[in-house]
Length: 200
Image (cartoon, rainbow, N blue to C red; front, top):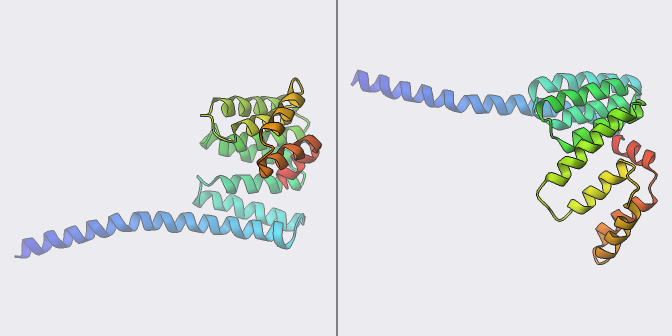
């Protein structure tokens, strides 16, 4: 009887340990996300562009990485704040941290390319843009793949055939207002202004 009770107790303890590990991980991750949200809210919503608030937000985001290392938004947000405050070198390094975790993250590579470009490192920017283009074109064809490839060409300043492609897609998607709006917007958009918008 006593042995049976010990076995049951042992089973309960093991079950409790199995449950507590994921709960602990979830709480840790949630705290990191909470720090991210506080930092973003302080800088973008309440005090946009304020350097002191930006530096405190960067500290919070750096701390958040310890709790949710796999959350790309923490890296994206930290790098954007760094760039807005004029520190594109740190923004490049922050995205580099993320790319060490997820080397083929298209958005991260593109964002880092923008920071390189704003940091007057056009060659490195173009390397990133070409990698994004290659990864996009290698992906399984999806409905919006053509528009993504068109956007990549726009960012790469790839003018060879660009105007013909954009006109072809405008005809192809004339019945789809959202896609047509994207295409028409891309025709009129200033590339440098587009890059700034992507960061801010």
